[in-house]
Structures are given as structure tokens and as C-alpha cells.
Length: 130
Image (cartoon, rainbow, N blue to C red; front, side, top):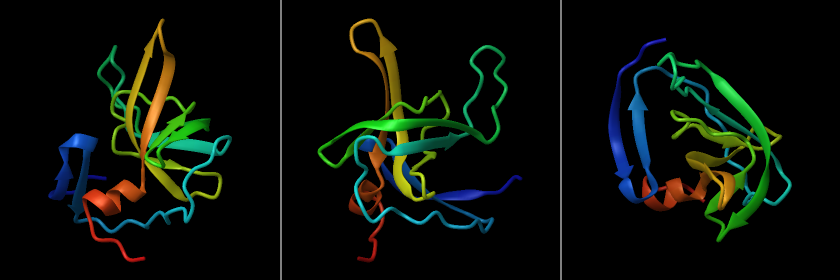
């Protein structure tokens, strides 16, 4: 499905943008609690395959919250690939708990995948209702 969009707000520090699209889609409800260690997670996105350049349309990975830093950074074992940024990280009830942001791997620190907590959207991009 193709659609057009307009950038409504952006936060370069957290690599977040709020984009209004023409197509109406169902909303993901937001978790009322910050993520907790051990929570099941599912990361969604449309990453590209670095070898072929092809898109992995509607791609999901599963994992668990390893830890949460400052109720801000959700470290998950769900693999994030290039192109997952901006996709949702949801809990086992399908509630939004974060926005997939970055991933890294290396000998010194191992593999880590991070989603910015969804509350950051309200703090940085849009006035959310309490």
C-alpha cells in the first residue's frame, strides 16, 4: 500500500519523527506501565536486506526486555535490523512500549537492541493526554 505523508514533528536527538499519513490505520494502544525486565517483546518494521537491497516487508522479531534504563531506554533481545528504526516495540498484550531506535553488536559489549520508551513521544513530539 502506498501513501503520502507529512513530517509533523522531529526529534533528532532521539531519532524520532511524527509523520501524518493520508491512509487511515488502526491505532496501537500504549502500555500504561513502563516496560519491566522479562517482559515478552515483538519488534516490527520493514528492514532492508543488506545483501540484496530487497525490503523484508512486515518483518517481526521476538524477544524479552533485558533491562530498562531510566524509564527511557528499553533493551530488548528482539533483533533490530537496519530499517526497523521507527517501528513499534510491543508487549504481549499488543500495547506499544517503545519505538525501535538502535542496535549494535561487537566483541566488547555483545549484541544489544534498543527502543526509546513510548512516553518519549509525548515528551518530545506531541502533547499527549493524561
